[in-house]
Image (cartoon, rainbow, N blue to C red; front, side):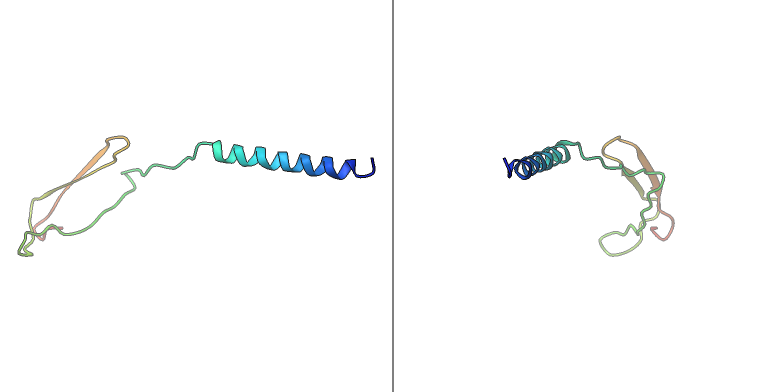
Length: 78
């Protein structure tokens, strides 16, 4: 009877830790999707010879929602 309390406490602590671990592992992981309004991309469109391609259309698409943003290059291919 003298050691009943520590064993009970230990068992309760272990069960609590297991339950907490299960909850953490079972909880869905949430991520925040990128918003195309806040995204920027930059670069230069060139042909195989390295010359700029003016008027090229570049489209970025958010695959989870299908939202698209389109840009057209200038005279320098940017």
